[in-house]
Image 1 (cartoon, rainbow, N blue to C red):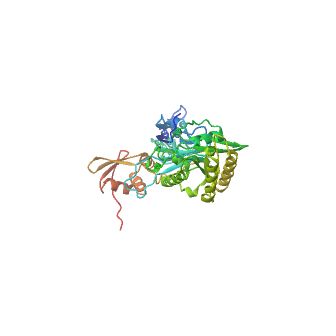
Image 2 (image 1 turned 90 degrees about the vertical axis):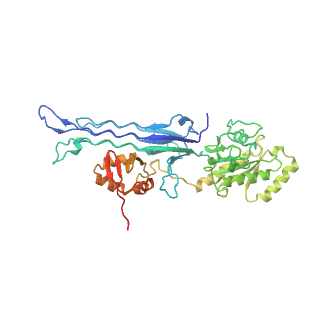
Image 3 (image 1 turned 135 degrees about the vertical axis):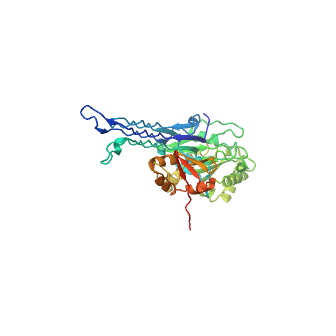
Length: 432
């Protein structure tokens, strides 16, 4: 299965059904009054954590994910059926971002993150369905006993999204190509990762689970990094983002190479230059692999230098193929992860929405002819339905940063703006 860790898609919540205009008629009371029911609410779009997948491959063939719309109300005060919600299952470690163009008026613009999926079955509400419109029965009063109007349903929210995956692993294996990372993860976890005696055998992140009684640790084998990776050489830094969430980094070094100390310097430099993390802020263990290939003299020389150069660093001498010191490594991994879990506690509510529509708007302005513009977007259309009176609509629009946006687009005072088939003369407020 192809590994995909970045994807673009569109989500559309269901629209609310329309309220209906209806009057009850029967032989006993031919003018019994309004009985128009309300429209059903539109379905929502949720993202849900799925621990059975570690890629966006299953989502890659579908670009639009839509929830069901509510049905219209009926007579006899019957409310329309609500639309069915849509649940999009994504791997743990998914970051959900808005894929919007940078607003022209924005200063210090940053990507808007709507949420992150970190736990199995964790559910995030991303696009909310529109409310159903009220039927004419809801507008009956002592002064208007027979209202001949009903409310349209609100539009469901629609967003273009960018999904990024940062794999949730406790341990990340980092090393140059062909240093034995895949052999190591196979030896520790019984995973069947492809191994071979040539560089870049691992082209995608591979996951394995190390168990000890009821305890489990997830280990990620990342593609090899070569000198100049931060500038795009080799596989570049395409997959290095996955190291961000790892509590512990293992530097895997080939002790049989001519200058393994230079390899260590390369790893630390490329990791720092990548900008993903600060190496000094991560727990790390330096692993000298393939010690079975060293002569006794070379082994003693490496151990002596390591005691001097790495006196403040955790380091081990192992052979993944011969399983030398893997029990010591396993013990060290569980102790380090336990320490990390005690100092880093994540708290996240199971169902929440992490944005506010007062700052997140999707309006667009189009010039139809000189000094004549059309303003569109679900935010605008919902607001115009809520406030059909022109004065109230303009009053609420001016509470947003719409004025800055229109100025950037070239709208002048006294220009005509069309909103939902209503025309307005736009006026900027004067500031003394």
